[in-house]
View 1 (cartoon, protein in one colour):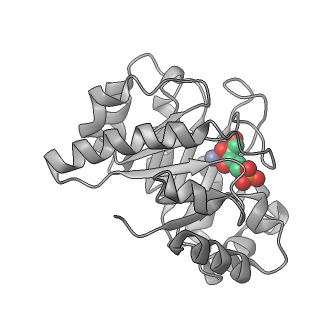
View 2 (cartoon, rainbow, N blue to C red):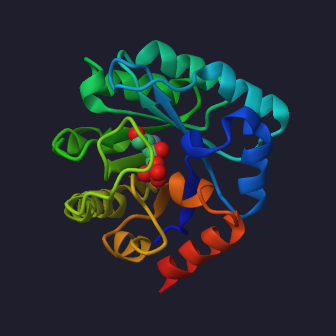
Length: 225
Ligand code: DX5
Ligand code: ZN
């Protein structure tokens, strides 16, 4: 089993002091920075683009940048994020015409690639592209906003994705991470981990807490139980 990764979503960070807040959360023990990109087209909200990712790199953020694209189309922006310093780039399969091509383009640009599944989107396409995927992201809210409640059905989706990933990993030896995004808190992270997630996005639960380190520590303790 892969070591757990905590990826705070900067959607809930102090955006007027983004660099400072990101360094603070990393200093508090976070592993990755989860970067939610919204275009007011694929999702009904608007956030930030590659210039902000580049600014974080210039500010001195060296942790993996986990870019979650909620945009349509995917390919041009994915390339811009690769140039801006993204480490992983994930997109929603329904947002691109050619899933396999989009995955290949991300890998060719030197990043790890991920596919994101909305609460009601089946995992069907996954089995055809598992050899090109480094991360599978299961949405436990409908994308577009932070601070929503966890949709419990996501636990079944996690178990299904875990089975597909394990079968593929056994055959190929390649590591694929299983990430969960939406409504993750200290009090539900244990059952989420038990359902198979190894990578945990949390926005409001971490940035909404006064003590980032205590929150991240409590999450790790729950995962380890
Ligand atoms: C939702 C985003 C999430 C969101 C999570 O579209 O993909 O990353 O910021 O926020 P919380 O943890 O507050 O649900
Ligand atoms: Zn996200």
